[in-house]
Image 1 (cartoon, helix red, strand yellow):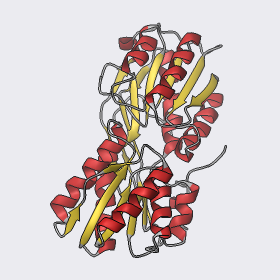
Image 2 (cartoon, rainbow, N blue to C red):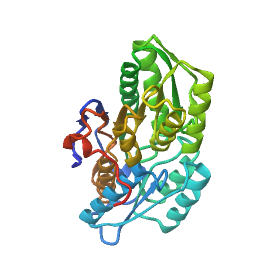
Image 3 (cartoon, helix red, strand yellow):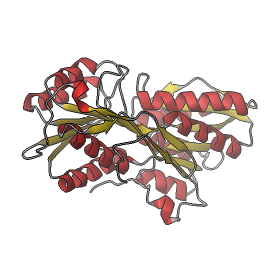
Image 4 (tube, rainbow, N blue to C red):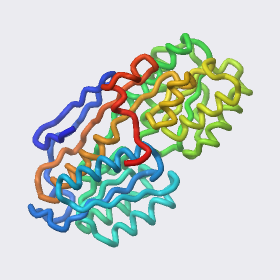
Length: 331
């Protein structure tokens, strides 16, 4: 998907509209020199979790786009969603002074000083997927409309539950921009449109599938009327599906999940999961590189770009216009 650098855009998803707020701005406002040459320039990507299919898909697309644009490309990511693991990677990359950095920060605030230091030294920063609270960080921010995705997940789950029973959100940890927005969208929509469903307190699994499995099993034991679970990322969704299956509740407890990794798609096909809210990580990666290259060249960049969200069910998963959103495990 190409990037329009001279105007605001709104990307219309199949089921969710992700608004791309903000028009082009000059990259000179965030430090670094402007110049047209890309010779020898390097764009680096730091993902949230290196092994996550969402980030693998993003990395593959970013690598292809970097080759197309004629810049060098490197990518890395931590083994777990953890500030203490991502910070050393940021500092290591900073020492090489790349022309641009694409990064998915694992916390909205804790890593801001590290990223600001790179930005101040002249590296053009593009925030991909997750972001930070400080709006001075980054020449561009590229992400799904996660709050809207949470609302869609709520409506889909409520329908599957027959608008009754208890539901729980299981997430990564507080302080992650994307998942915080998904929780807000989900809870707000449930309260506003589905009063017959009782929302249990949000629980967090630290992005550990085994922990998500344990949470589901203990919740089932404590709440016999549990009718639905919203799992808001890849690893959580995998753990939730395993927990429901192990409890002998497959098909009885409905699951609405974010993302579309290979295991999640399998869980959808076999009836463990009822709906997946797929993002477009490939587009995020491509557009991230495009914005980084524009910034390196001193051209106008888009401050904010929204990308597609698609609700996938057993009814539409074989449609090529939908299956193209399935994530990869390797390039």
